[in-house]
Amino acid sequence: MSEIERREDRTPGRRGPWAYSSAPEGREIVRLQDRYDLFVGGRFIEPKSGRYFETINPATEETLAQVAEAGEEDVDLAVRAAREAWEERWRDLPGKERAKYLYRIARALQERSREFAVLETMNNGKPIKESRDVDVPLAAAHFFYYAGWADKIEYAFPGRTPRPLGVAAQITPWNFPLLMCAWKLAPALATGNTAVLKPASTTPLTAFLLAEVIEQAELPPGVVNVIPGPGGRTGEWLARHPDVAKIAFTGSTEIGKILRRSVAGTGKRLTLELGGKAANIVFEDAPLDQAIEGIVNGIFFNQGEVCCAGSRLFVQESVFEVVLDKLKARLDTLRVGDPLDKNTDVGAINSRDQLEKITELVQSGIEEGAEIYQPDCPLPERGFWFRPTLFTNVSQSHRIAREEIFGPVLSILTFRTPEEAVEKANNTPYGLSAGIWTEKGSRILWMAERMKAGVVWANTFNRFDPSSPFGGYKESGFGREGGRHGLEPYLDLDGSGR
Ligand code: NAP
Image (cartoon, helix red, strand yellow):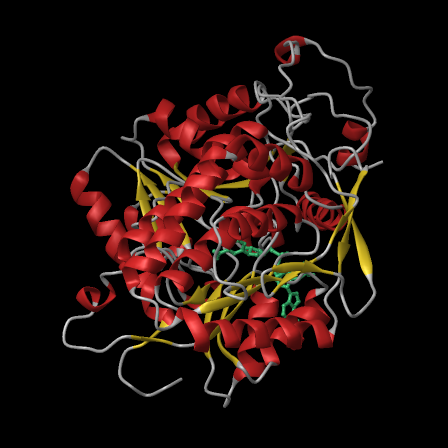
């Protein structure tokens, strides 16, 4: 029996550091519908495809609702609605008017924040304290931030004549369902584009709640449309539609490559936010207790299902033992379980498929000779769970050190000199983010200049702000979301049309 199977055989029961009383967030605030229809042209409508698919709670495996699947005709309807809204209303609306709508959406997100947080947690599996304190407030912050830009677009690009592009196809992943909608919709709407949004199939529910908010905010019909459906069909039809001017995609590198090929030669604009294998680098002079918190947050936040997760830890050899001891002790205190419990640190994995992917990669780590450490914490009987996991004795050639796991799994490696740290950290096809832990300011600058990563955090990790651009190098994608840079992909800046 493998190490993993043996550990998962243990009977759950609260004891030791896991003996705490639960503080469940009530789910009554969420009024689940049995069925969610497409949001097209400002109305919720049954899909022409006639098809619905089930969406579940990954922490309990219970069915939450049936969700409309957009077929090819539905995609066409949605894109046409978005095009009409753009031509007849949205592109000529003064920026200050567009700003009002964005403010209304932001305010409604704040007013209904608890409802959004509970629904997000139920559909995604993430701890309520994260959806409550991170996902929903950041989503609102994005709408506020881009509302501020809506009437100042020309000032952002002096000497140029920025024009909106038209219909933006926006395809989002399941790890931050609402937040990724906000990252995409807020800059698109602020710059005068309209949108057709295809949320990930396992987590469509907060996109529908957002559609409800958009309806309440009285956005002109068709400015935002929400059409779920399987990526390989709905997503592809949407991306290929001739009336789509711009595609904004967040998801896997594999699908990003497919999209890049499919838009080649069409003149459509494309931005890709893809996978990552971030390095968190700890020097011997780092504030170690602070670093431990940053490392834990870096890899266990959102169960490690984060594109910029700090999944490779590089520790300077002289402090390796002390860091490892502290990390193990900290892991033993993490509370894994009911995502609606306000005390929970690590929630459910989003789907059975994702759990299988994590399990397979962790098994490969054991087979390739790495040493595994997992706390003994109890796990719920139903749902998709994976214990926080550390690997030592990891070689750079191991799959766990090279491939994106997208789960709560940290590979620990060592280095001796800053040069070696840079060389090892950059030895990956990805380049989304990195973290550096040291008291020396000059070293932070020296390292940051050499790291091939879109974001470099110093003495912190996983910090986001709507005013900061985010995006990748290499196979982590191209284009930036957030900040003034996030306006650019939605604008024709040189009069070249598309
Ligand atoms: P995914 O499988 O690539 O799916 C992302 C989205 O694309 C989903 O809506 C999916 O629909 C859709 N899709 C799938 N195949 C498609 C196709 N052929 N054409 C058009 N759309 C298609 O990724 P995921 O598993 O949802 O998300 C995890 C990945 O996202 C990770 O690699 C992670 O690193 C990356 N990510 C990156 C960022 C970033 O900012 N760089 C942020 C978050 C996540 P279905 O749901 O129906 O498959």
